[in-house]
Length: 350
Image (cartoon, rainbow, N blue to C red):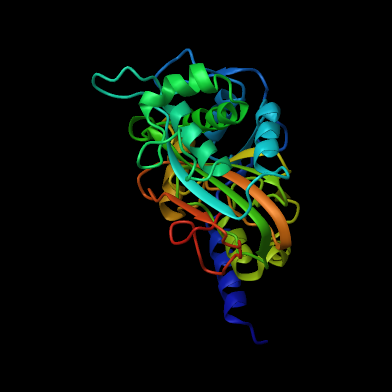
């Protein structure tokens, strides 16, 4: 019987990994995504232990340390996400905008007295005003169209002391940054925030992939949500998804594990570069060795949803690990998904 090259690759991969498959005590999955995390207020440890956040970030951080957990849903953010939806998705909201900007989540060094709260508020204000006010707006920015640290008092205390949209962006930025763990705590100080407002999102059977970053926070404000595997993906499942799409899961007994994020559901997905401090026991050592052989061992396998010219607005936040420091602002460009493109090579998001 003749087999296509993709089918042969899938069969060979499945046989190889079935032969070296670990015992059940190491392959059991953890359904961290199936139930929302506790909505109790959490405390970050960025550079100020007194910063209080609304989301269940501390619980998520603990859950992500489990090697079998690749994605978590953050609760306690309903008010913030509804606020962002009203600002970025209403009748007067901008369309066909793609913005990616750095948000600093740690206070300044040296003689600087700016805390992470102040500095992140300024950067989130830059994101907000770039989206809702075109760069031609005067009176807010310096010559480079940026709000500076010297504008903190004007923004926080005089003109706009409690802007709910900026506060919502700041909650997400500081929350995602609080998930840094292990070696990342010493090296990651910022996040990259991206807002995409697509009036006609179009995508035809996008391929599944993992993100080339430590962590990505993600929410769909309007439109279809991201499709993802609800726990770590085994190599043969990944090959099936990449070569045959959703139909390939049935060939490797992976049915029922593919989920779609709901509108206004904030999820955090592990990427290929996630690293956390874990006890040096036999199980963790096996997991580390597995990740050396299989770089996507803990990453969340997901894809952009299929779309047919529907409106879609998303917000994503990546830990700034230095591998992708691009920032951009694009207006008037239609969002058409193209095969073979990744975020590190193009302005596309999943």
